[in-house]
Image (tube, rainbow, N blue to C red; front, side, top):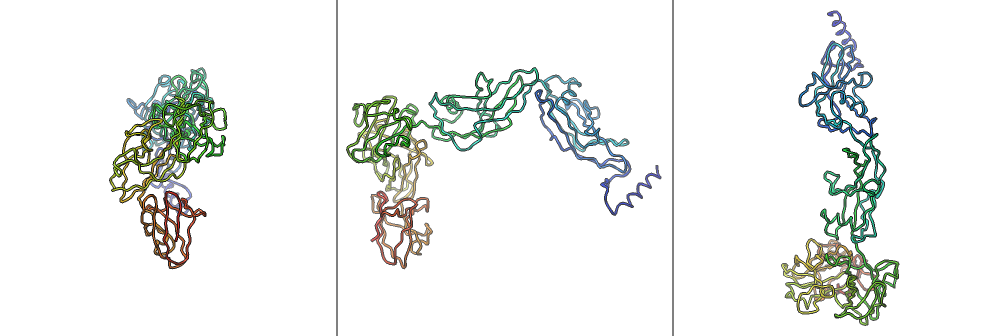
Length: 577
């Protein structure tokens, strides 16, 4: 033996210069180098699937460096966590390649059979500790770490399957939340149970996250047996409302997948898809304002009060004398109209109904609130516009502060304010009291830019002094909003006197009241300029080529000279004299 050791040392000395062999530099003779485990990670939970017996389970580790001559062989060893130890394992399985490889590959059935042979019952969970033992014939060495694993034996199972539709998408689709005729549809591929196992049923599952928690599930069609779900839009919306999505003006963004069940086995689809909905009940206006285009009708604002949602719709619109119109339920369908079927019992009200009556007609030009109440078969045609009622005008609903009609369902109002005045948007009282109703008044509180659409609180604050610019905006008929800006308008442009195109350095104009701003300015040379709010480019006006201003319009140019510039923000016109 001494002679062998001498030869071994000599061999190491001779080959030290070329370093071609990866010998362990810390051991000699037939010792083994320490090694560590790779996978699976400690505390892994493995549930064996009876429907996929040939599926692979792989265990791997770093190889132990050999001594001089003998290459080690490996065995995976496992013992019961509660009562066993790795000196007397219940499982001892050679690695791949007759123990030569630093990995062990088993089928799920092989692993299941091994546990069954040790008395682990069908479907029972075995909590184990495991490691790997290296053996070179003269030395045995356990890996440097011991890991935990829980393995549940086969009983039931299901094969893998995937989602088909709807495809994963973050763009929102439209859902009619009160429709029993429309449906939301889901499809997926079929999963197969284990041989002789219970038939598979399916549930579509929804989550706000990647299924850290499940929000709710819905059984598949045909008593959960089909690989599809078709659920009425109203029923699906009822589930959304039940699980926290009660604000119908907000977009719902979820993740969905499918859970297949066979006996005690639950198998999730291989994918998780994104899905989003905008819940809308729509009604439309067709007439003189849109050229009587039934294919491109004007969408109306939906009443968000619970007892009116899906039955009451309205819009604020500027009409010319003798303009005519009707209300329509369905784009492209002339037969879905609601017309004038006789005078109602209150001012501005008319009898109406599905596919009855002639055109409505106004004789006087003005801004009107047009309302359709399909539940009671009433329509209202009333001269109204949105203004402001609050501390700055004595909270008098019969005399709101009005501003400008910018476009259908959008108003601008510039109000005097102390910086603490509270207010509500209001569309003018028909009487001395605050009376919120379908054919009466409407008013809105709000918070964080979102309008409270049912006449409720909180009040909104006009946060600036001496004026505040307010915008009431229902152009998104499902998500009404408001904006608050400082009550200032500035001239910004290319000359130093008007800010060098920096809004913060621009020249303030003087407010004249009723939406009119004025300023006298001297240009030292040819100068281009525009008009901006104090907040900068978020709200800016330029020329539209006809003597008017429009948001985001073209630069205005003037030669050197002194000019008095006037901007009428309400009527969208400007003059330079």
